[in-house]
Length: 167
Ligand code: S3P
Image 1 (cartoon, rainbow, N blue to C red):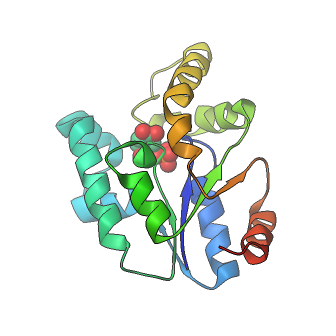
Image 2 (image 1 turned 90 degrees about the horizontal axis):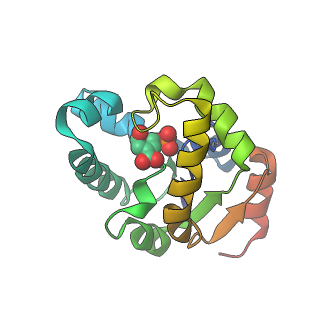
């Protein structure tokens, strides 16, 4: 089973993936961490030194590297489904799950880990809220192509949804 967790930054893709994978008895990979290890640079450094376009190319490259592994939960970065044909590829190869959390949930999480995320690192709460509205408007039609959408479901509930669904 190949599972892709997608959704906005701060929606808990890494946390959910880490906890979901053992329930399913498969390995978990966080795409950003995998990319950082391979490049020996943080996402923040890549954005700063090489720019977003370069990051998106790396994201696509490493994401394609992982696809041949059939037993995996992959937590993607928030932008991954929105570039190239990544969303189509994910839907063709596995089960895509959109963590469609509330705005409040996302903003709380972003404020906690803001420094790690180059796109929002220096924003005030108000700027962050406006940015969220604008970016989600652009990205949601990618996210909404997911085969399964979950709102505020926790990991156990998501696990049960996967078990009960006939994909
Ligand atoms: C990004 C989200 C980040 C990371 C990069 C860009 C985005 O991942 O890939 O900073 O474009 O939404 P998280 O969603 O895990 O924060």
